[in-house]
Length: 326
Image (cartoon, rainbow, N blue to C red; front, top):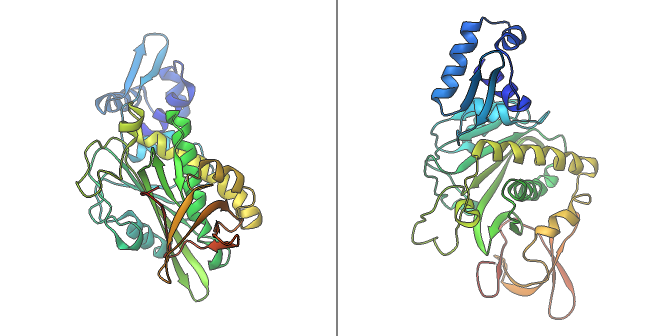
């Protein structure tokens, strides 16, 4: 019931009488009073005024199932939230839940990942209490060759949500790293499970440096956080809900044609590689060229020195600026 009361107070923004809460949720005044008391203990600023009722005046940076659900405004994505205070990997948890029959749009969130990983099996530093780590479980009805584009859909959604909540416009380093002033603030890892020739599930893991201000020596020159770049606190649960809201809209556009034709232009407004000289780190051989943008399949278009254009598929390929990470 705490979740329902919290969501109502958040959505109403005005005083809600105790009687109204009792009637809406079918509980006693004592039950309402106890629920409000528990919320106050968790750090929520709830003002109680006689003959007026209760009003939510402040929200702490709480990461919990109740808080995430109370922020959520989606119809499909993130409606089923699984919160784990500590876990090995939210991607692995989401895969397990998929095998157990979890629904499309299930969101797995944790406060601390002990074995988080990025692309190519690299570790992802996941300290507790300050950052965001979540995985979205999807059950697509399309062919496996379309799944790679979902990484770009999520990257766009994260960038849009960060801009909306902080006012800072981040960039996307193709295909899915979110950067601020040339340093990485978010990584995304998409994994697919096949059953015969069909997609059984797709899990999209997202790690965002929110409040972290200290990084290991080996990545401190390449990593940053919202706190370092924006200088203000960002409520993690609200940001997660905002990403789900944007992803739901962007995913619907993707599903129309099963490509990025309706998202390409918006994606490119965040693309830091566009119109820059880049180096493509391909197992088949490195090469350099000028990034022109992406096509409807999410491939990076590279103009080579001879004037020809080469399409680069994400896969095992990495993109670097000629003189650094971006």
